[in-house]
Each structure stands twice: as structure tokens, then as C-alpha cells.
Image 1: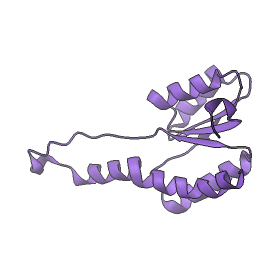
Image 2: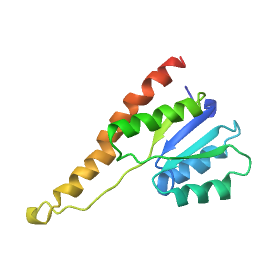
Image 3: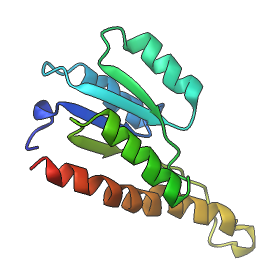
Image 4: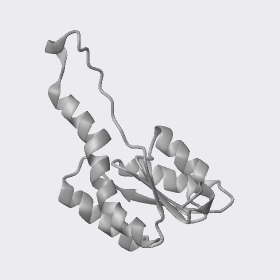
Length: 139
């Protein structure tokens, strides 16, 4: 896929708010009219997006929690690929950020730190690994 205008079907992971939502709505407006699959943890936000922007049927929604265990992520991604075999692009926009004051190590919440690393890095690498065989098969 050399250009965003060539996309037929794109999944935007973490698209119920912020940059992901903005990307989804911008891509939905492209003249090439790709199918845009929004995803996120909160069903009510997915429902709001599809009800307010999905009248022409090109905006779809998939509930996806990037912090789920590996087996659940694999099953969800396999289901997405089965449902949308023309999926030819994936964008990762999910993320969290917790403030940490490293000048005061006693205030650092290591559990939050691990969640941040898992959400922003480990889960992305895991999902890329699961999407790659399908994307490579498209040529």
C-alpha cells in the first residue's frame, strides 16, 4: 500500500477518542471511500461513532481491548480478518500515559508503569505479529 488513498479497508486501533477518532473521521472523508473499522474498549463510544458517522455503511466498529491476553487478541484479530478479508491497512492509535515523578521514586506506581508499557508497546508488537501474515498475503 503505497498511499493512504489506495486503502480499501482500514482498521484503526484505539479510535474512539483523540487522535484515533480524528484519523478515522478524516480517512472516512477520503475521495477513495475506504471502509473504516473503528475499534476500542468502550462499546458506547463505538456505538456513538457508528450512529453519528456511519450512515453510508462504510464505518464499522469492532470492540477490541489491546490489554487483553494474547489468546484473546489472537482470536479477535482472526475474527476481524475473517469478517473483513479485504483489510489492507492497520493503524495503531491506542495508548495510555501515567505521570511518574522519577525524582520521587516512592511515588511511582509500578503497576501503572507496566500497564503503560503493555498498552503502548507490548500489545502493539503482539498485534502486528498477528496481522502480518494476512497483510503479507495481500502482496
